[in-house]
Every structure is written in structure tokens, then in C-alpha cells.
Image (cartoon, rainbow, N blue to C red):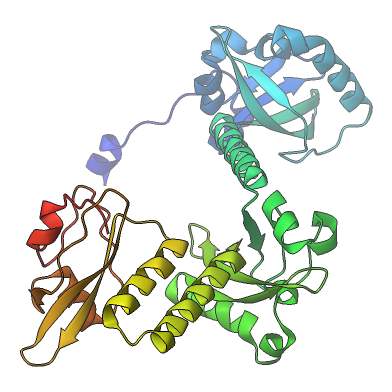
Length: 377
């Protein structure tokens, strides 16, 4: 027992009377001031915070720890407090600063407690350095301001936040333009008001939030309703937002009006259908398909790959080429395996080749594409 006790670090001796011993173990920097505003005690936290040894502060005016620009206001606060001593909790809303020995300042929060001893009245000040908190708050404000400016200036997208129950919390200019609601008309309302009545009746809004929560994100294309009751075809993405502990804070919702894209797509399908019905000649049919495609997306080359069961191959037929481009030859044969066309046919999924570095696909481009120096498709 004696050997272990000798190995322990000895407690720091107090710089003065042990009457303030308990304050030495307070979690915050503690400064005790007498009725005349002189420092009677500082604990080791206060020494480290302000850069003074206790002996340099005992007996000094408390103003030594106050920036010069704030000393006049501080004297006024002390006078008012002396008239009505009371406990003031930490974080009372005052913007305060402390002054270190070398002259630099730091933001602080201070709680005050009156203390009466036989030798007189004292004030116990617990001081907390909030430099890191202030930095985080400023960074958060800057981030929020950047996000606000970004979302407010994006007019082609409705970008807004929902609370965990689906009520609108924020509203950008794009949302105002697309949906017709001013911020004061929509904030606080449930986002289900953007849906058709039949979708509301079958619970689609709640279903989308549940799916987003389960999968981490959900996308949807369907009709939405503006303030005036008109409809638009929308692409919607909903993403849940959690804090560091995993608690759900709400959802981000991004909506884009793609009514024109839907119209073009339907127009294209209608024209292709008409071409199928009116063209028995296969060459004329392919040419008509190429013309329809160009109304939706300009291109250098367009082809259709037709599946032939015996043998199991794809026969590539040109349907269009840009002015000045020589069309591909007819009847190019491609295997099902190892080609982009075959990959699409087998998977039943669209394929986008961006032509960017790092793309990795389980096939090579056919010779007619490499000769054409195709970069994307």
C-alpha cells in the first residue's frame, strides 16, 4: 500500500489558503473574485487557459483577464451584479471574451454564483473556452449560407428539406418557380399536397419516404401537381438525412420538371409506330427511325442491331449518319458475347459509354466503331 501511494502523482499544492480547495477540482476554469473585484483564487484550469501562474493573479483586479476594449462594459456589469447577486447559468447569451497573458483574446462562456463567507462577499466565475465551438458554428453558418445560395440560385430544380414526418422545412427559388408556392405558403405543409389525389389515397408519399429510409435513396417519375392544379411530369429523388448518432433529421427532396422530355419521348415512340405501320420496305423503315431519333438526340451515327436466332448473332443495320459522315455498311454481324450490342441484348438494360478514363466493361468495341473513332455512345 505504501509503495503504491508513493508512486502516485502528488496533488498540486494550492497557491494560498485551502479554503477554496474544492474549486481546484471544478471541470471549468474557476476564478473567485472578492467584493472589490480582486482575484482571490484561480484553479489550474484557469492558469492554463490564461497563461498566468496563480501567484501572478492573486490580488490583481479581475480586469487583467478582460480585453481592454471591454473593461468599461465589464465594470458596468459588475456594478449591476453587485446590486442583485444571483446565479447566472453558463451560456446566458452574452458575447464575452477573455484576455490571455500575452495579450491574445479567446471567446468564453461564464457562469456566476454569489458566495458569502465570514470575511465578505465573493463571486465564483466558472469560465469555459468556446473557441472550438465558435469555429464549428462559424463553419456551419458558412456551409448553410453556401447551401442556401446554391439552392436559391438553382431555378431548374426544386430543392427542399422535409422533416421526419414529411413536412416542408425549406424552399428554394426553383421550387417556387416549378410548383408555384411561395415559401410562406408551403413551409410547414405536408409534401403529399404535390401528388395526385389517387396517389395520396393509396399512400404513395409515405411509401416513398419509407423506401428512401430503407434503401438510402429513392427515385420516381410520375405526375405532380402545382399550386394552380396543373400537372407536370416530374423526376424526383428523395434522400434521408441522419446526424452522427444515426438519428433521422429529415429528407432532402430534389424535383425536376421533365414534361418536355416526356413529350419528346412519346412523340418519338408515336413516330416510330407510324413508321412501322406505313413502311413495308425495311430500308425506308430504318431511315424513318433515324429521322425520328434525330428529333430527340443529335448523333454522328445511329444503328439498329437485329437478333437472328440461327445462328445466334446480331445483324447491325445503319439507320442514320450526320452530314459529312459516311454511313456504316449494311449487314455487319456481331456475336452476342463480348460486344456492347450483345451486352444490351442479354441484360435488357441501357448502356452508356462516356469515353472517359477508367471505364471498365466486359467487351471490346467492334471494328466498325473503332474505325469511326467512336468516343461515346
